[in-house]
Amino acid sequence: MNYKENLKILIVLILFISFSASILAQDDVLNEIYLDLLEKYDSIKTYEADFIQENFWKEIDTAKTSYGKIYYDSSFLLLEYAEPEGQKLLIDSLSVTIYDSASNQVLISNKNDYELKPISIISEYWKNSQKELIENNKNETRIKLVTPENDQIFVWIKDNLIIEIQIVDNSENMVKYTFSAEKINKQLSQKIFELNLPEDVNVIDNR
Image (cartoon, rainbow, N blue to C red; front, top):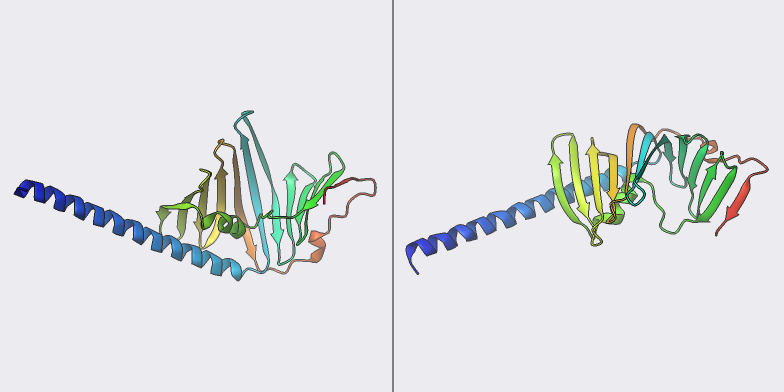
């Protein structure tokens, strides 16, 4: 083997080692970011924020934007929609209740694995996904996760809070939640989580 061939092999080895080191370094950074998020959200006992929910259904080429307020504590999570007006989604330890004032109908189902807390969504995908650090500076971080099913999850973190989650499934359907005006560990009245349904509401109970 001549000198030029040895040099080519050496260069390839150096590039491979450098690439492997870069991947390991990124994994370390991602792991640190995730642990910091877990620590931050573990300290959050109550959470209140404005949210925007964007949905897109590829097959029927339809998009919809909703918005409102999100509240949660250790026992409940509530999405209170301003658009569509009068719609509410309440999650407790056992069930999910969806109320629509326009149809005067409430749907109740078992909770199962239904989660909407920002950190719970991330944790659901984190372990088995490929991870990519898209951006990381002093105050903002953007991460991409790709699941074994080829679903893609994009996460935007600012000041150690998740402010945007976008999920694109392998059929190109999309849902995105954007959070703003967060209030952390502010006392929440339990009345917030009372739906106070009309007496003549149509109840569909699938539990």
